[in-house]
Image (cartoon, rainbow, N blue to C red):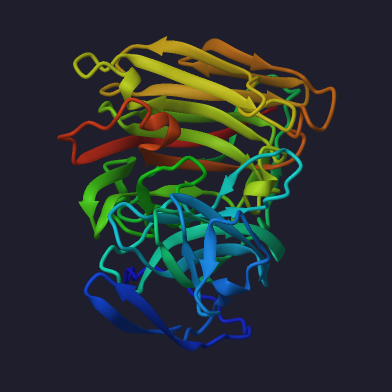
Length: 429
């Protein structure tokens, strides 16, 4: 269990399960006895794994004191009652007899789209044959009963219990700005020029936290209010990913206006420089305010205004590609039909460029330095056009993952920086 000082713990009361059990297992050297105890916690939903609902037949119960995987891939399903929407720490008490064993939790196993919602990422299991608690932080979970699968990878992986503990309550956004789009000239209605010092303005931004993989098997741990990862400096916002930092493979930051302000229509504009080394994934984008957990997406809508990946940038010239996309229930990756625009941009690394989206009730147009390269205007149904509902802004720098890490990681890079001069929202007056 990592002792991150920026954890925020909830104070609601829920039932706590405390169990003390003993496990006897045979080793090659003879009989060994291990005592396992579910530690007390101030707040958490603890599940004893032997109480599973169903399995794939590749696990066995250890005399009612846990489960053991029999082959390389196995799973057991559970109903987990989440008392409050928010971001959760996932902990599991497990042991393995060989290297490379992992577990992960799948949410909404009966979802209508046939998707696999991995809400923890791969959690390593200690190979010292002793029960050890491993964890991942930040899993988004909505209130209610969740049908989940605990996946075990590795032979003879033993699990006693798993637990979800609330780190941060889901924040309802109190203010929505609806921009006029039928005027003559664009005027700024909201902005952050990043002219301060130190931590970004917390009246405008919330920090997302954790290392659960963010639905893309990303490597970074997003920290909260940590200047090493997000700071105002010389009139810019610097989001810095740092390797081998705080006991994590990478740390970084993800800022969002969720819980502060959301936007409907207008021009949204970023002036930015992006990192160049292979393995990074920098983004300025919007996400529907209706997002609570992974089941919300893509129905809540997502507009990618600025997306780049390091492996598409030239290390010497900084030339690369900018991507803009619109994700909805009718158009997204599982269907293989998400509308996307791609354009070449000169020296994205050392020179600032302006990335923008003009968003109206009739559609949206993306530009780089005023040059149009993407448009989307299917407003025919709510599935195709969730963009008649408010969206919040997100700025983040991810490392690795399904896209950023598609061609590996830059081996010698220890720091990556996403630099923004400003973020502005306009309306036409």
